[in-house]
Image (cartoon, rainbow, N blue to C red; front, side, top):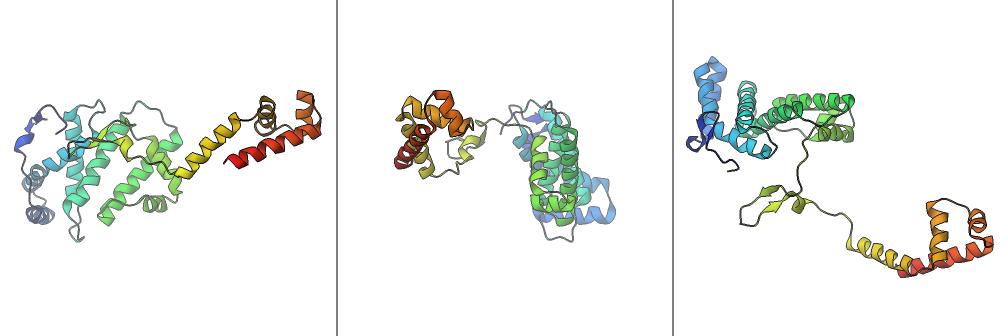
Length: 257
């Protein structure tokens, strides 16, 4: 486990039981019928280990573990209150995004990073829409479904939600089961093909092989946007010479790559 202490918010986490799914569903039906606080308390106690597993994803951000655990329990209570028994879905499947959403909201409100008002407002709407869709669909909605519910572009919703997310280190471990730790950076891929990398190196080598005058002509022409006449005046040769040198340099670069 990610934490140094066993007792969180006065609860000995090593003694938390895992409630079987059948027992959860029976208690949920009883709670929906009676609204009994005692039944709800049993459901809370039987799912605290689930809260513990979710808050481990938010560790290492400088937040007090007790606070995170209590916020996670708030998400659990919301899940118990809003769970729809008519949907054929496991309670944990519905509960995890509710707990995660509550924790994200807490971390968002306590973030030190300043985000523009328009992005923040869109992010709040997206989070609210996600929770409503989670309640109605009994699963975590896709980004497309959230965007459609808001009448916004998917890209705008993604950017808004990312703007209020806490940054993480590329060296943050995300999985360690076989003894070899997997880090965030290990899950990042480079979409450039090997051929594109080879072409880039070939381009660099070809540019190094050009004369200083040829490099200067290409720089003025394609980076500075000068015409051949302007380049000719600047370096003191004719426009015809500029054209010949430019074409020759480009031909050698093409041949190299």
